[in-house]
Amino acid sequence: MEEELVPVLDDILERVRDRLLSDWREARELLGFNVKGDETRKFDVMAEKFLVEEIKRRYPEAAFFAEEEGEIGGGGPFFVLDPVDGSTNFLRGIGACSVSVAVADEPYLEDVKVGVVKNLISGDTYVGIKGRGAFLNGQLIRASGVSELSEAIVGVDLDFPDKTELSKVFPLMMKVRKLRKIGSNALEIAYVAHGGYDAFIDIRGVLTCESFLGAKIILEEAGGVVTDGEGREIKGRMDLNKRWTIIASGNKVLHGKISEVLRGK
Image (cartoon, rainbow, N blue to C red; front, side, top):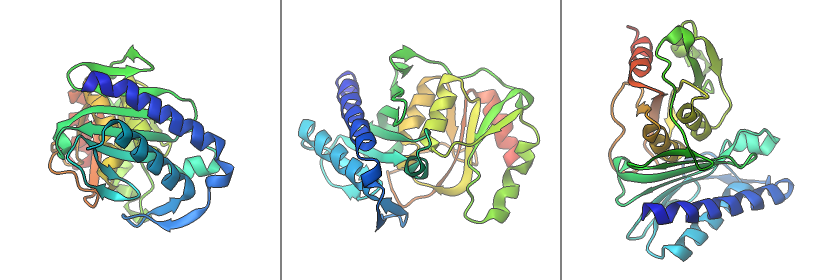
């Protein structure tokens, strides 16, 4: 299934990208709020509807965990969709936004077999296939081997709902070489996979699985590590209501050092 899925998904995601870029100015209307309580724009709904329809055309029994509509029943395979990750960037014409898909045989986080993340502006496409590696535009990629905090470039999501909680990341900020924030979690985890970043963290406790699951397998297949903010394995039934913290690193050594700093050790 995995080998067949990748070209199918790449084609569907490229067509979503074309449609979004063509209709960008007309599709910015605020429609309301999605099942998670987040703002929904016309482009979010349009992209998700297209994804679901096109995937179901190829896989009639497909089930979905989708950012806008929530859980859509079916017998499987299970597709986890984030139609526009980095919606504010897309709305403002900033080039860091993506469409992300994860695919699993069963509705469990640890069962993902394929992940695809496509940059909606550049078209760069990241793919992870369980047991077969990670790829950027068809070329095999590996995560960074940087293991010292003082040498590490780390992406950090600083968009805390309560700004007083920014202090949680201060100890790490003081120890790393450089910080980055671009506003698309899927892309930032993918950047770790190809060595652009050495790590990425989001410890706000607001992430839901569609935001990171496609990128997670890409990084893991590139040799990296992804856990929750406490260093625990990310597993369990897919649930769009469960909130997560994330540490994503290029290697185990750096991951351990970041985890220790965030735990105050």
